[in-house]
Image: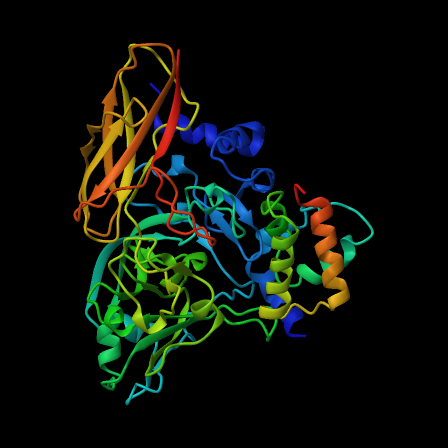
Length: 94
Length: 401
């Protein structure tokens, strides 16, 4: 509820920025929805795009761990693994 | 001769023409993903800025916009950590002063902040700790800033020490913690709260600013009031300030204990933040001496035999800029640039250097600043994992035709 409320507030405050965010497109594969669900409740997914492709698996793991353990992203361990695999597949030079 | 206006127009042309911006940024050494994701877009009340992220909004100022020592409000960069950014209503806004070291906690309205304390002004550079992170080699995770996560404004406000004096600080005050109105999307996410050492809070230049370049602060730069900590990086310049807490113990949160820290001993810094130091790292404190070429972008075309006026900015943490030098031969010979208006020791200092290219081909021009303590910029990056304090000497390659 808090998230929805914040989103609603944000949309009132920054209509232009939010409108533009909708143009962002992540690489499509079966786990794209898991990534969107896990990451985009707190930030736009250009954070992923701009940190590519130089991050390797250990760094993407560290980022996902920071998001779940420090920032409290509501992502299960199983989904966290899927997100890391997805990021390595599409957003890493590896 | 390439003029600033032409540069600005060519930068803005990227909005409609596409390629121009990418081309300009491609030479800056940013990661490919950051180049692909960057677009020039207009936030409310702003000129088109380079988008790094939409939410929270992180937008940097194109170098071509820095055509003078003061950065206009509508060109000033935008940097937020958390997505819950509310528009503050000045009538209901309150600034609460308290904490376990404040014997007389109280609160202020915006009108009281403006009328009950002596207004003071300071021109000071606000520079993101991670400015130029995107140029780090090797690249490091984070917002991939180029050169423009910085700006210089004339700030007007009340001295923090005057505000604190009314709260009756106890003798064992160690830090002053500041919180803004921004909030995380999730309750479990650490709120962005920062502290500065008591000695820095009591410095006469540290102010709670309610004006920026003679106007109210833009919403995206912290309306109605923000902390201004001249000489220190922008992580401490809290926006939309709602709370000032005087503390007898160090603030312990993610943003102090884990983020915004540099390795001990790697940088020649003067200002220490001893209450937050540990064995290996220390909080980032003051800005390192730096300069940038703003008149000519990498790849700009100039004519052989025609004088070009190279212009730029130099700044440091408050020792003041002693000299700026330009090299035309890869750093072997350095010649003095002419320094421009001095708006104070915390301000951008404009400089210019005139040279006439005598041969066609690529002319590489480098600029380096030296501050009042004799400290100068580095030739090679002092690498650190968070990508802070990048003051590597910039080189711009002009195409002489």
